[in-house]
Amino acid sequence: QSALTQPRSVSGSPGQSVTISCTGTSSDVGGYNYVSWYQQHPGKAPKVMIVDVSKRPSGVPDRFSGSKSGNTASLTISGLQAEDEADYYCCSYAGSYNLVFGGGTKLTVL
Amino acid sequence: QLQLQESGPGLVKPSGTLSLTCTVSGDSVSSSSSYWAWVRQPPGKGLEWIGSVSYSGSTYYKPSLKSRVTISVGTSENQFSLRLASVTATDTAVYYCAVYYGEALHVWGQGTLVTVSS
Image 1: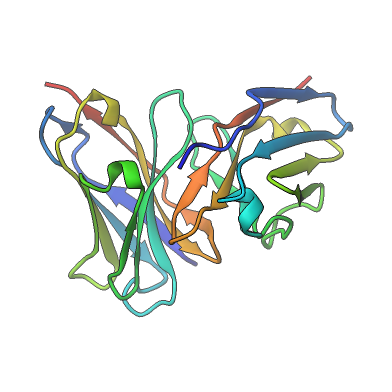
Image 2 (image 1 turned 90 degrees about the vertical axis):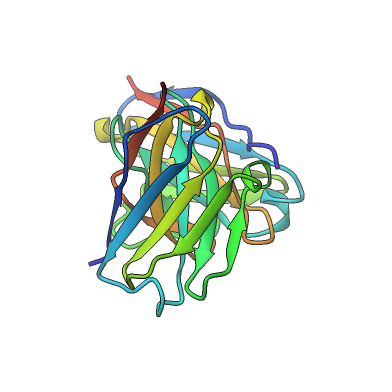
């Protein structure tokens, strides 16, 4: 059960779009449509932004969207805002009620 | 509104046992169809799923931690707990509890820092 692979950092200017990738294997990301994404501001608890690959929980802006192709999931944030600057983690179901996280991506809004 | 709050010692000696409790308000851990999870985050590092317990007491652990971890539903309807034995400095982390359903962690506690040091 290895951690999912995410880029360490991404950046974008306000109003632009950024995409964060999350690569796993056929035993996790590729095997189930259960990828979730979490936003974490410094010193705060994570907040769920996307579940089931592409569904937004209530209250999450529609600027956040998710997708998956094969063993790679992606989180896209459009219309970047200053408050989007945070760490983002992907997470996948890995069978037998196990979850596996990605290493995290730091988003910088320039 | 569902809320979770972690509690327990902030300092544990090496080789000792880390014990934390998560108090849930707005739901019952024993009657809900949800599962309840623990996640940790070493300082400056990423998130790591530790394990989960179902409303009926079934448990699921990260394989690499399985030999040291016990997660259980508490005697109180509104608590579940984490025990991690034989701790070392690498177990120093912020520990979060969360509600787990639909294969995602929907509501998190604020987290509690546990330091392993003599």
